Image (cartoon, rainbow, N blue to C red):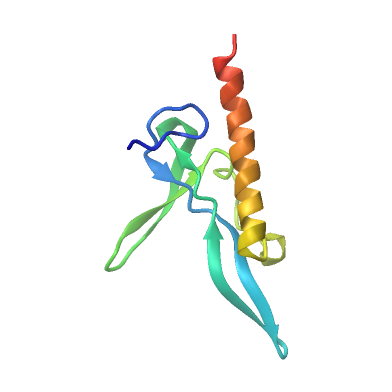
Length: 107
């Protein structure tokens, strides 16, 4: 099965790796940051770009969709704090992309 770009329905070549949330909890005076949640939007070569890379035993690219490609570092307080909140952020991005796609398809 071919994964499609959220913005134009072309074949997706990457998924967005931008952090949109992470589990957090306090222990005494220490903030403990847990599992990260990424955007994961599927995009084609026209609707995103590579913004970095990971070196080491398992090298990989760090990619950003068109919704996130202009974003710099995200402050920890601005991130979603749970899987459910991250899912809502991801759903809002998907809905925005679908609205843009519908504008392309509608005469």
